[in-house]
Image (cartoon, rainbow, N blue to C red; front, side):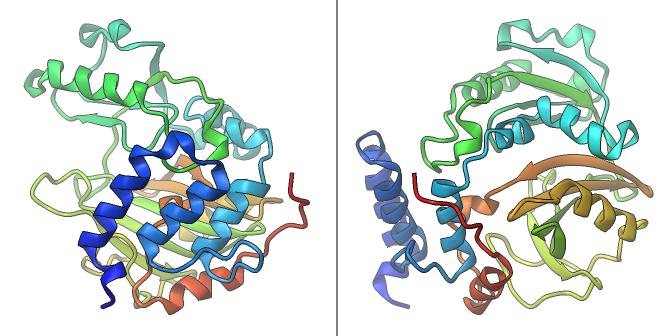
Length: 299
């Protein structure tokens, strides 16, 4: 492995770019951070790989409606108008700040997450056994996070930071596996399942499948886990993904399948923000072939 692709180099490089991020323009920042993470020069004039094309979309496909689609509150209303209310996880309450969170009014099991970022999620299985102070600190940190700061993802720029509490759900395995469907111009091509996310002693697993549910031989960000059976109503999941991704160059439609019942998770325009390598690298090019960039003039 070349030195510039080693984990040590990437950590040092990312730290340097992060500390100077406010002084970078969007394109310059993306070029620098892309090199730090992937170890090759970002080609925006003739992008070929999936990760390159995601950076191009950040700069050129800035539709106002994308903001509504990534806001975890507004997205529910958007999705409801397209596929119906039966696929929406019930909302318990919405908070503007951490001080408004009242645990006494929440059920024993619940989920709270920030509306404007990725990762600011608290999953509570037993309210009597959670560290409320720790939970509030995590949520407060999440509310202050500027998700556009280190990703330059335009859709999140205008999302109002809030908290949303939802009903807790789990599948037959006692967790909530996330089925993430990659759609290109309204057509699903591949999906991956995120599992073991709620196990403190286990690393999250990502397993990729084609639309026939054949396991695909690559990794991206996390190792593979054990083979997972095709979910119930998988065909319906693909149909819902088609409806939600219609007219969009690329979006990842995240769904849950809880004992045969499908629920909407979120819409993601930039998988891993386009900064995580595929192993082997050929899959970065394969997904790049599927992503046909729209004819948009540079602003």
